[in-house]
Image (cartoon, rainbow, N blue to C red; front, side, top):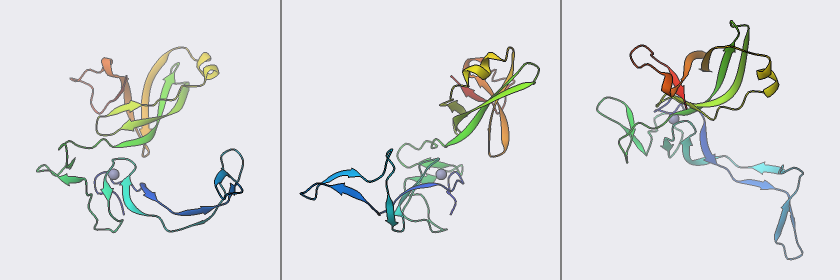
Length: 170
Ligand SMILES: [Zn+2]
């Protein structure tokens, strides 16, 4: 199913796994088998709930098509809000932040995350230093996700009179 609140399809869940481990002579766990933190899982059961939407935090007892969030409800305006606070939940998804340079001859993309509810950009990963040394004049910045692009601006540079659907960063 798709999350009723945000429409995304990724959920935190739980799963029982069996893996190879190393024990001592008293059958006490010492270490995982496998190098570099890899674990050697050889059997995994069906995942189970409760399920939590990775993007918006909506919680579900199960993933049946008709299931509704247990921690949210629709308000009078038809918007999903948190039961506790009555506020809209933050919907957070991964995105790409791109700076465009030198008469649009160069663009430097990097990973970031966006909050769709607050229209903010955060966790912008630094652009490669060497790539940055080849560019000079910044033309524009935008953020992209779900195959769409939106203008990006520093929060203190936005003019609420003229700028619409802008995503901001600090
Ligand atoms: Zn969701």
